[in-house]
Length: 497
Ligand SMILES: Nc1ncnc2c1ncn2[C@@H]1O[C@H](COP(=O)(O)OP(=O)(O)OP(=O)(O)O)[C@@H](O)[C@H]1O
Ligand SMILES: [Mg+2]
Image 1 (cartoon, rainbow, N blue to C red):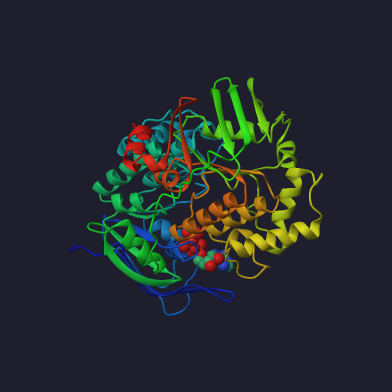
Image 2: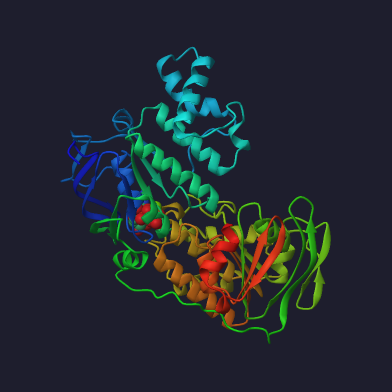
């Protein structure tokens, strides 16, 4: 690359209280490059992005050059003027406004404070979406769109703002495989148009697929910069963690155990139909499939959040009919949702305010459960067991890194001492090391007799960690596999077909 680099940073450090989030990190990104930032939860990826985008100021001694220009200080305004945009996890869009307004409002209004010109807005929005090769209804309210399409709106908005450097912090975390593929193709399009993209993801396959180069951070320090070509997931994992993980099929024969949860002919109109299976005590039952397969909808019925139109659910041999998720919790079902924000756990309250317990009580109504002391003790126990890294107990919940937030959610549910644990995409946003940790725990829990329903759209995840796998498509169970007798490629071919 002969032209000035897009990003040239030296000696970037950042301290929060006592936590050294970044220590003397150098970071270089070439013009038009797709560059991935990789590393375990809490290693400083988001912090680095926030420094470049002016959200945080680095410690003294930092040198910052963007597109060849030196900056003494970057503020969000300076960053925007320099052509930097960020696609935040929450996307920072307006649910009540239309697609066109979200994309072009800021740019158009910015120039003409008193006259929002609709024609101009539509023209700009159309041009930006065309550049991405994406088709959306300009008049649709944003709030009605799926997350993947909202993301496209956020990216289009960045383009209207004339962004030349776009940061995406875990953009695929809540996307399905198909949506991810679409996003990766948009990233390629941007790169071909000369836009530089810095991308964070814990899905290493996708990192290696999309990136030109990868910068690896560990514990706030730079490990190195590597070409994606020739890099393997195993090697990248080693670089990120300093450890090696060998993936092997953990499946065991659980056919002899008695069922804890039985589902017979379960149907909910428009979502899924005629679902029958038994989850045995001590079993990890994988449930995989693409978007729209009905996996999460099924989980919602099992957790009492919605009601089935037909069919029966039996827990410990007794038929159950949950009127709410409180009933489900009281009966011994725990549900780690794919959307950790949904249950309101992640709030700017301090960890020691017992946000965890408060949420739990809200859901369970406190009825028939453990006393506070015992419950707090259990949460503390699981926080230790799961190796949740928290700074000071007084720190806000939302300062925890994504993976640690997820572990905390798991700890919360384990403290309810469930019989059945439903894990809905439990490793979204969780790094490889922590994933291995979570699955070790899942195994231990199964060994203690819990029945675990493991929902995931990452086929490798269920292949390596489940005892048995159900494949769901179009609202039905279309296949059952034994991981010990099925190659992961076969399973992938069946699911992604
Ligand atoms: N505003 C803040 N106040 C206090 N500590 C913070 C703050 N922001 C980040 N940290 C801490 O700095 C460290 C780096 O956090 P950061 O969010 O950059 O990690 P990350 O690499 O993005 O992790 P993840 O993969 O989980 O998103 C963590 O220990 C985190 O708890
Ligand atoms: Mg982060």
